[in-house]
Each structure stands twice: as C-alpha cells, then as structure tokens.
Amino acid sequence: MISAFLRSQLDVPLYCLWLIAVAFLCDLNTVCGANLDDDFAEFEDPDDSFTADITGSVPVQSARQHKAESVDKNISENSFSLNTGIDHDGESVFHTTKSPTDGATVEDSELEEEVPHHLTRSWDNFHLEMLFVLALMIYTLNFVIGRSKNAQLANTWFSAHQPLLETNFAVVGDDGLAEPGTGTLMKESEHLYSLWCTGSVHCDAMLIELRLVKRQCLFFAIANWIRPVHDSIVVKVIMDDSEMDGWVMAVGRKRRLQALAKDHQDLAVYCPDKRGQRHSYLPESFMFLNEIPEVIPAIFNPLVCKFLNDFEESIEYLFFSDQYSGPKPPQE
Image (tube, rainbow, N blue to C red; front, top):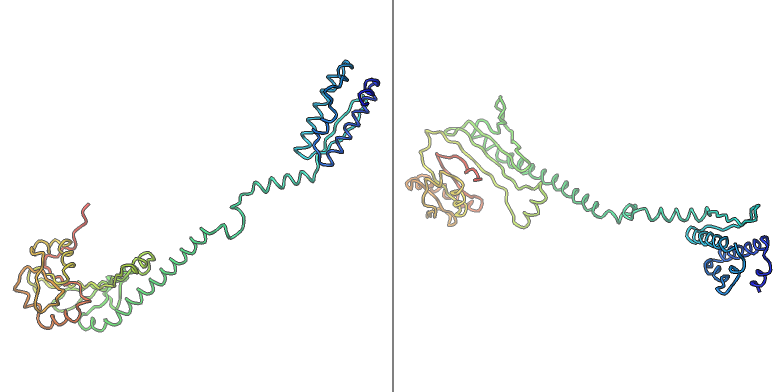
C-alpha cells in the first residue's frame, strides 16, 4: 500500500513528509534502545520499483540514506540524540546534539581507566617499603644496643684491672698526646679498644687490645648465633733489649700454633719443627714451638705452669720473639 502511494504521489512536499515520518520512527527506536540499522532495514524492499520509476531521485535518496547511516553510527558509539527538521528549500536537515550527562560518564570512565592500580592509597600496596623500613629499624636498634654493650664491657674491664696496672706502671691509659695522660681507654672502633701503659722496670711499654665481638653489626650477630665467637684480649709487652735473650718460642693450642707459623716469618724460620713438642707440666692441649730447648725449664717454672693449667680454656697462645716483625703481608 505504501508503494502504491509513493508511485501516485510524485511531488516533493509529500516525499519530504514521508522522510520526516521515517526519521520520527528512527527517533522512537533510539529512545527505546533498539538498533536503528534494523529499523531502517524494515523499510527496504528489494522488490520495490520506486527508484526505477522516479528518475533523478535515486542519487538524492542514496546520499540521504548514507547520511542517515553515518548519523546512526555516531548515535550508537557516542550516545548522541537525533533531531530532524526541514529547511526553507524543502530539504531534510539532521542535527546531532551530544548529551552532557553521557559525555561526563564517558570522561569519568576514561579517567578511571587511566589511573594506575599501584597509585592507590591502600596500605596493601606498600609491603616492600614496609619490610625495608622494618629491617632498617631493626638494624639501627641492634647497632645502638651492640655499641653500648661493647662500651660497657670495655669500661667494666678497665675499672676492674686499673688498680693492678697502676701498681706496675707509672702511666696507665696514655692517649698519645703531647702531655702524658692517664686513665684513658682508647676507642679504635665500636668493637676494638686499646690501652697503652708505660713506666715499668725491665719493660719499655705494654699495649693491651680488647677485641670484642662485633655486636653492633646485625649480620655478624646472626652469624655469631650459628658459630659463636668470644671476646679476646691481646697483650703485647715490649721488653728492654738488655733484659731478654735472643730466641723465638710459642706455646698454645696446636691449631693456633700452626696458624701462627704460617702468618709470622720469625716463627716459621727459627722454629723448623712445625709439629710441636709437649711438656709434662703443661696442659694436655698445649704444645710449644721452640728455638732453644734449654730455656723451657727456666721460663715454665711451677708458678707459670700452675697459671696455665688453671686458665687453660682462656689462653690461646704465648709468643716470645726478639725478631718480631708482625704478621706476613697478604700475597696479591
């Protein structure tokens, strides 16, 4: 029936009214949420001969149909609303307006997608930083506690032995300045303290080093739990040249003596017997390396042997040398 009507009415105003009706139907389908392409497809009749009968209208209809399809695509993609009207020349004009509400929704969704997930303010995204801060706090706390404990041990030892040292030396705790001082325990590092004493008979000077465990270092403290290391005291006595004969000798545990022989040139040269020898009055775990065997009875008298037996677990070695040059330099 619509085909017969179009064939009979060929004037332009009626044809424009027909286009307005089609556009109005498209607008209704847009509001209802239907697909506009399917609605236009309902009006397309492959057997319709309208385009064949009316000459000159085919290009206009194809151009208008192409324009309507482009408008439909913009409506479906960007949420545009479609308005139609007729200009003064009788041509149909399509106007598109963008919905501000829909535009804001699109912009908000795009903004939400652009924000990275790791920039949120949740504490769940800072596990690595929290672990780093916690480890730094633990290391700092261990450093403060270990340093104070080493200082307390050094001061306690010095307070306990200061009266004994002052009875044998004129100056105890010299700080090495221009004017001789006394009562100063030098702090070399957080785990190393030294004490310098001078002014005794047959002795030039004596240097005492307190080599404490590195309690201020967290990694060394953890390693110390696995393999314990004890604090040690190294006493170095410098005798007068006229009060000591020339010879080299070492007494201590076998493993410690072997390490000394490798590190000290004088012990390796003047004591060729690296296996060590035993003494009847010395503890069973002690051996000695000696250049002159005749000096053993003269030095290790009953009083010295009793001292070594009483403090066997606390003494590592005794080293006598008139050719002392210190440990060997490391080989490159």
